Image (cartoon, rainbow, N blue to C red; front, top):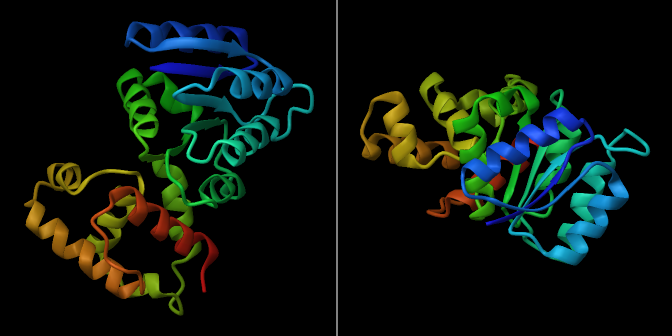
Length: 217
């Protein structure tokens, strides 16, 4: 699996390269600036891009914008974005095209090698990997009594958070120590209460729920 990595801090970039190589990823390019990232994504057609949001020369959102532009040129290009802090705007932009293969992790997660590698693999396979803190903030933002989210039971909210992270019904059932049948029932209730069409497509359902929570009605 070929990876283009963009991170301007040398020690972190080098550490990520070594970590990914240790888990059988091929590093097609490891760059530190926005222009280098744009060129690598255009020329190398990687299986997945792991991108820091803020890159030189602007140190604003250049990494994210390069990734979004690459996805416009190559729809569905898997992109895992790394950020120092939760930025809801970045999460919304990343999810906006609804084609999947996206992830948003805080850099703290990088230090959990198993979790980070799992997220890269999930995104590369076309799935979704959203940081739990991002999900919690999106949920909190839509938790007023006049929002459909308020109709959810505490257990349904817990299932929604795990579902939005990109977890399958089986993974959620294991986490909550219940049956998959129970999770399927909770999932159906969540979609019904949020006015969303029930779907067996894990990626599509996550994107739909996140888009709904972020944009509201």
